[in-house]
Length: 113
Image 1: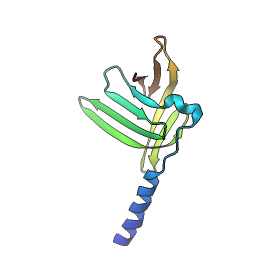
Image 2: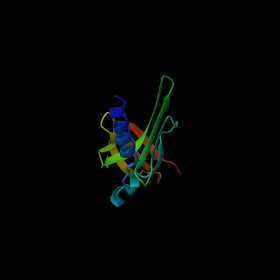
Image 3: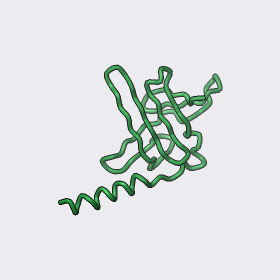
Image 4: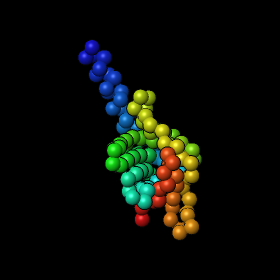
């Protein structure tokens, strides 16, 4: 049993170490994004890592991982059962106040200055 666990954990460690940079045409996604009360924070690095934090009165959630795919509708991080998807309903754009904004999982986010 231990012999099988070692290769499996080694594979998981190697997979988690793999990260592809955010493609040049998607660099507008890179940065720290938060909603008005900072209860949701998403950090997307140019190197292809994502950190997500949700802090509400009755709900706390933290996820981080390598971005596996990124397009204008879904951000997919992690592998297999250790993966998460975030739905992008409004891709990054300059809003009327000249601030970069996007909507992810139904939450309106602004890029931190």
